[in-house]
Length: 432
Image (cartoon, helix red, strand yellow):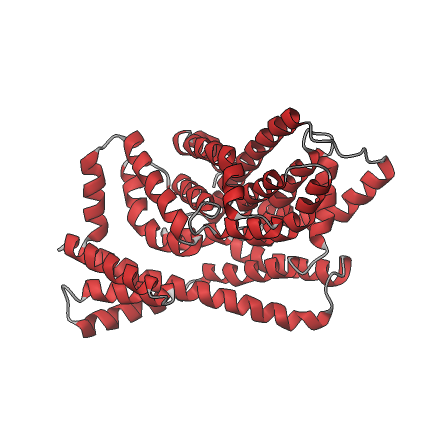
């Protein structure tokens, strides 16, 4: 029965998704079709509706709209330039300094805004043209911007780990944030290593030296924005406040920055920020509710147990099982956005990972790392197409220039997967 239900679920979902229906509708319809195989349709509808409503009755979910609002406010303009200047100050004398600045800027702005697309457009929109004017190859400049933009999906505060925490049954958000910061920093440093080698071989110029007065001014201008990450992560890890309270503090702090310190947006823009936040939050909440219906359908029909038996039947070697999980997630990430992918595949793959001894926090990092790679991978990766559009080059040229970055990211994924101490040491050190 589980096999038949799996085929029905995948068939209905795939068909409706290809027809262009919203993912949430496709997920719920597929779930109901699978449950209807073994239970009356009216019972399936009633139970699925109950599960969907119950999934949204969570205090932890309040963190999602607040962090989204914080990111929307930070994207209002002006702040990106200050972070670019600060990033240039940090890596200005390193080979390929402008490209290094792009990476550092994406890491800083991505984690503050919570959006890889926002980082790619805001930071890349400034630095890619600067790199081209300074003699950098255009496809290389585009590849650097595209490859480094997803770091904001790993470096907190990020809604990806909040969603994973909810779907996985309450995995510590603080632990996920700390472990994700390690993985995201590793991603960024890996990008910088490749850029340094390429810049040294091609003879790309260094940025001019910055005098002490200018360096102090640039640092002082950037500190208020950088303090958001320090306040949020420091407060959560230090036990001063919860993730939900941190999200509220983040909103208050970004309002002060945007309207008081930096004055990057007039007050009349505030209603627009609320509307944009409501739209994004509504989409996420609908997907969360749909994922609850999907989880009910899979549990009711025994699909997760069947998939677990199938994979573990192929091998019970943790190394082999993790390779299979990574391959599945890499393929999924190439076709599906990170939010829906987390909602759909966490209930399926997390039990398998736990059976071979993988900590839920560690699996969360592996999951998000995989799906973040998918955002810059063809054929559907939105980060790839946005980054190519920012640089105004053909996607195929960007893909060719991205080849060494893809190889490094797969290598880093293997490190994150098979060396759990790398990401788990800090959370355990903080007692998370």
